[in-house]
Length: 83
Image (cartoon, rainbow, N blue to C red; front, top):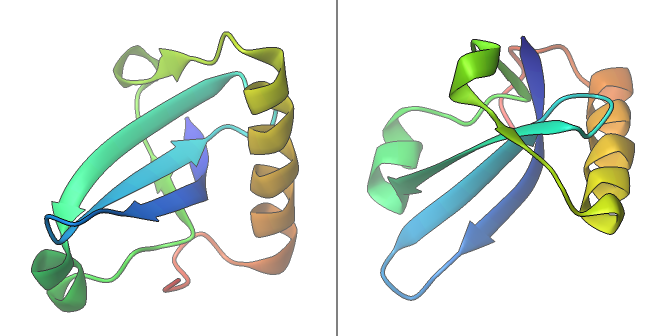
């Protein structure tokens, strides 16, 4: 399942939370990584994950926001583009 980057949040512990979502916003995948790791391995516009590794997005507002951002990313970027 192709998922597009929809959110990137930094915190005070020098970690980044990345959220990827399907273009319909119904499924998401979240991972955390250190800023140091991300400097060595860039963030890409999209990733592929098995549906079993994703979570359903229950909140309708969040689902709509994820869908809009995933559609924008898919229209503007190739999946392997560094973001």
